[in-house]
Image 1 (cartoon, rainbow, N blue to C red):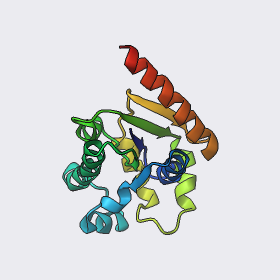
Image 2 (image 1 turned 90 degrees about the vertical axis):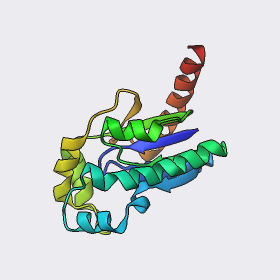
Image 3 (image 1 turned 135 degrees about the horizontal axis):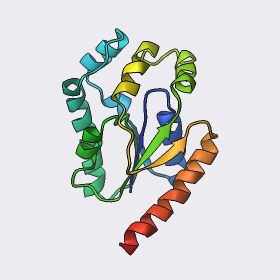
Length: 169
């Protein structure tokens, strides 16, 4: 099983991803660590990434997904995956992958970003993330205002419902 935790910067992907991976005993990968240095440099300058900037990053994440699929190992991976085309690439030739969309309002997420100091993502880039966001129709949607524990438990509960539903079809 591959859980891909998605959403805009500041939605809680790393926090939820780490908590979910600990709860399930799965490997954890934070997509932020797969950005090439030039992407991080752009973001530190407040410059939004474009599709061509994101492609090598997405391919690096896809490589991790493929590795886990090929070895039949479980993982929790965080990735903004803002556009459907990105999610299509990540999910291509992949089975047992569930998208978890951490959904929140611009104001709530902006407040969170204002309290982060060590991250390369700048507050002013949140607008571009919301503009690029194509909300998924094939994901478990979680309200980011819930506690970490409640979100993790709901993800686990809804995963079993999704798996059972898919097995019946």
